[in-house]
Length: 79
Image (cartoon, rainbow, N blue to C red; front, top):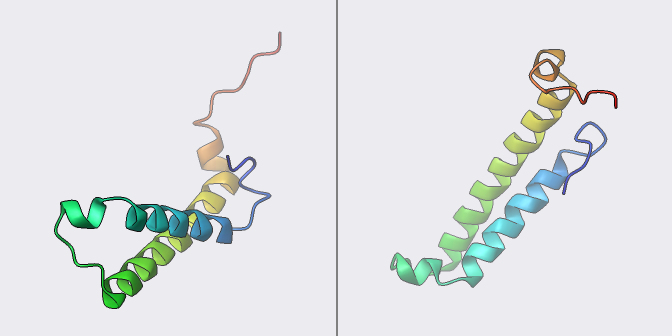
């Protein structure tokens, strides 16, 4: 879905996190947990998902460029 994380901008993670938030708001999630969907609730959850997306995007970028992380990925054997 993302492809090469070193070639993508971290803001894509924010977009994905906000899409998750939109999905949660459009499902029965708030009603199941008896959460009133007010403007304040929407603003707080959008802000939380945006912050999560920033952290996720920057962490993925750092992990993708970190040599320490690359040793954990098994290399495909030449066939």
